[in-house]
Amino acid sequence: MNETLAQNPYSVPSSELQDLPSPSQVPTIEEALSRGYDFRIGALIGESWRRVKGTKGIIFGGFIVMYVVAFILMNLLSTVLVFTGVAGLAAMQALTQGAGLGMGVVAMGFGFMLMMTLGMALCYPFFAGIFMVGIRRAADQPVSFNEIFSHFRRSVPVIVTALLVTLLSSIGYMLFVIPGLYLSIAYILAIPLVVERGLSPWQAMEASRKAIGQHWFKVFGLLLVLTLLMSLSSLPLGIGLIWTLPLTTIALGVLYRTVFGVLPAPR
Image 1 (tube, rainbow, N blue to C red):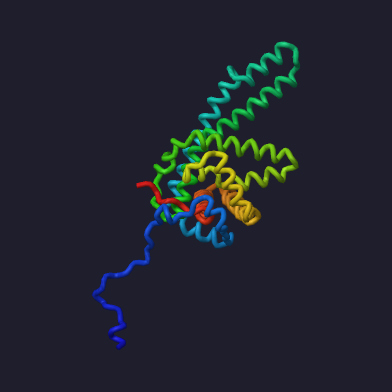
Image 2 (image 1 turned 180 degrees about the horizontal axis):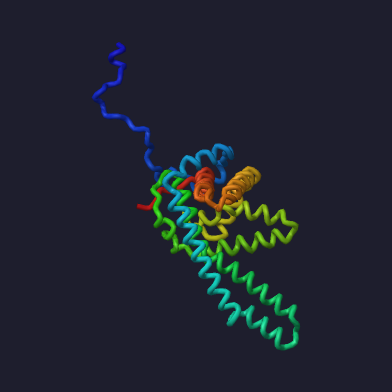
């Protein structure tokens, strides 16, 4: 009897690997919002740390590319704004027409803020690609450096989303800080929703806000812990960022997967 119950040593070995989910197995946005979710901060960070191996070069390299592009764009924009832009002209007119130095300083300050906003917004397609690397890794999907450049076709909605999030969060910070803090956390998953699910900017922002709103304080705690880890790791010449930048990116990917699920990667 025991021999018949014993495993056949000549049988084909079984595998514990799971098949990739089909699109029908991944919840829609409405289903994800209605089913709810939960996570433990320590467990999420622990899982993310175990997934860091094999992604450090891709993610860290992606951030280097993004910051190089940001540096170039901001220098170009600053040149345009100072010499031919609205802020530069307004400053020169204010100084030459007797409006006073104060008016010129205000105009130049406005131009600098505009330059920073536009420069960062134009870098968000790269940031969206880095975010998708974290999401792919969280879903056990293949990752490569090309992922960072694979979503430029969604550049316009990504940039619009970034500008809207920045605008609304800035207004919120001016209204006694708390509304801005709430929105900046609540919109954390808006950009990957634009890329991974193809939502419009406002649809993505609302889906992110409704989802994060279910556990806003826990998500805030997660981001606070990740920020502290990155701050501490940057102290010894920034060497620790080689590990904490990928950790943070993958942690956001695990959070996204926990909330919305991840569609199979295109083949």
